[in-house]
Length: 386
Ligand code: PLP
Image 1 (tube, helix red, strand yellow):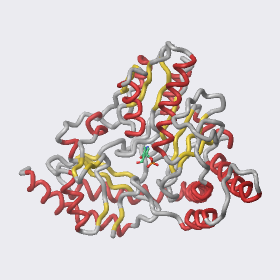
Image 2 (cartoon, rainbow, N blue to C red):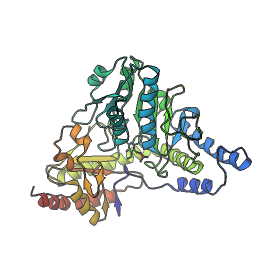
Image 3 (cartoon, helix red, strand yellow):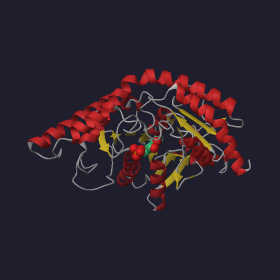
Image 4 (cartoon, rainbow, N blue to C red):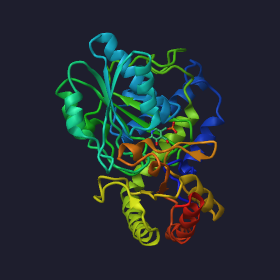
């Protein structure tokens, strides 16, 4: 099997598996006062320190969560509620139109119940946010801004620092979803000027179901779940020592090999792009050419006439696991909101292909997909009469 879906989830690292098994085998709730509880707490706090160090944060800024989705929800809802509670005029929530659904749908939900006035910042044909539109949207009535570090469908890296500069002129905190970024790019929370940043373990070889929100101290964050008051009342729930330990182990390894991996993936990406352009007539590769303004491991293309579910099914039958990049319900790919925001019609936005690479991807995987793709696209197009 050739696995080209690392952006969906990456293979578990041995270090993460070992750390998880070791910690999961120990007894003790990290909030209990007895010796096993204190030992479990020590595992959590060691993991928190390592996660903080790897991401340029202070351990007190790391709120462990059940993954990227929870971190995004806590950031968007918690920050909006917190800011608008302190200042009722601060009702305007600003997010980019290409956010992951964990941000976008949380923001739309707040708007639908009248809690927020929502502004979605448009993007250009490469998926880069319109900074002028952001500047226009910002004023004293803005509650928060959420702009992702790198897009999960097309790989475009956003001008987060420029967004932070614009927002800070109005005293508005900025959150960034860096779930796809941390495996490949140098992400430093302190340096970024961000108020909050979401990360997830399973995109870099940690287990599914663990992540974190990095949140600056003093940030007004209203909890999204109430309970035992763990993690300074911001995120209740028994602390997951095994998940935290496994996340820290995976992150340590990912950061240590990140620069070398980035170069290796750039090489594979070049070959994949050349091959794709030569082998698939009519395919338009998305995003910017400029390395540094896109993720090294993602190749995304719109292939008009070739519906994503058909192409994916045919590739899968040939032993290749790929993705459209957008949500899939009952085997039918929904038109990608990211491709639509980039200017594609709804029809073309249902004809996307995302090939995403990571640390186990080899040149052999790339050649296999290039060999299978022309036939799959031809058959998919024949099925729609294109
Ligand atoms: N944000 C981005 C950009 C993602 O790619 C994903 C995962 O697909 C998430 C958030 C959600 O993360 P998790 O799967 O850990 O809930």
